[in-house]
Amino acid sequence: MKWFIVLIVLLTCTGKPVSSSCDIEVSPPKVVVRFGEPFSLNCSSTSNQIDSMGWEAIYGTGTGLREGVSSVALKIDSVKDWDIAPQCFVNLRNDQQCSQVRQFTVYKMPDGAFISQPNPMGPMVEGETYRMHCDIVNVAPIRNLSVAWHIGNSIIHNDSFNNPTKFPVNTLSVLNLTAQRGYNGAQVWCEAKLLFSPPIKSLPVIQSKLHKLIVLYSPVFAKPENETLELTAQSKIILNCTATGNPMPVYSWGFAHPMQLTEKNPNDSQPILTPSIQLPGTYNCTVSNTQGSSTKYFTVNEPPSNHTTFAAVVGGFVFLGAGIFICGLLFVRPDGSFSFSKAGYL
Ligand SMILES: *[C@@H]1O[C@H](CO)[C@@H](O)[C@H](O)[C@H]1NC(C)=O
Ligand SMILES: *[C@@H]1O[C@H](CO)[C@@H](O)[C@H](O)[C@H]1NC(C)=O
Ligand SMILES: *[C@@H]1O[C@H](CO)[C@@H](O)[C@H](O)[C@H]1NC(C)=O
Image (cartoon, rainbow, N blue to C red; front, top):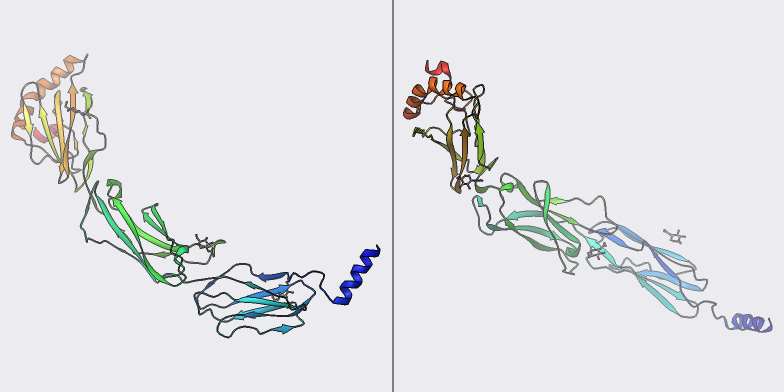
């Protein structure tokens, strides 16, 4: 108790502060400001030993030292520098001086994002790789820039940049795109945005123009397996050879019959064949385009049981059917599929 009183007296006599800390606090703790916009900062101290305090800042916007205050605000109407760090000073009565620097992030949205190709190209070819550029113009700070490449509904590539510069720069994001058939007809574009934490919700996303991809690819059947069908007296057989490809595939049908009836019709370029001469045998369909070709086989079998009906059908039609097959006189229905109808040749 005695020592405690002595200590108090000592302190009172010498005027030494109980605490020599300045307890400076600057708010907001983090400043992200758009170039040209205003901002304000508040510096305060909870020390009871403040002699004077003030802001030292850029372009004569400091506050000077003020006495008898415990907080001082710095207001700047328009940020005109990319690298600013205002400093708050607190002078204590014991001639001690403390300060705190507030770092700024000054940003500028890009002027634009532009897609280009180093080698101007026509359509792409499936499996080959193409280089695409996205030029981002006049953006700061680049370390907070994020570039995303979109194809259709998916993001296929993201880019970020390690450059620490605070000044606006132009930059490039490169996409090495391997052409896939699924990309044919899809749009590709790039998007640039600035990422801060916490995020600034009002920041726009800068989007490039859309660029339509054209990918050439060899034909592929909707149903690639060979098919085996059975003839029935009641229903027609339908041979479905539908395929996709770019350029549009061309179809050609062939028919090999045990009776050595062969038929090829150069105009027969439909994806679906419905021969009404219901003959067993092997039908084939070849689809082709500039990128390749592919053949699918349909094996049409006689019905195992109902042989009499089938024989009657064949017997009734084989003569005319053979003639038509040899001559290649096909009748095209208005819907585009092929058919021999009874009315057609009676
Ligand atoms: C600055 O902060 C102090 C302490 O938190 C507060 O009393 C004062 O009103 C603030 N001034 C401004 C201009 O925000
Ligand atoms: C800017 O980006 C860097 C690197 O991703 C990150 O550390 C920093 O916090 C970002 N700046 C702001 C103000 O969020
Ligand atoms: C279809 O049949 C042909 C000839 O028999 C054969 O070469 C080909 O591999 C078969 N295709 C498939 C997908 O099974």
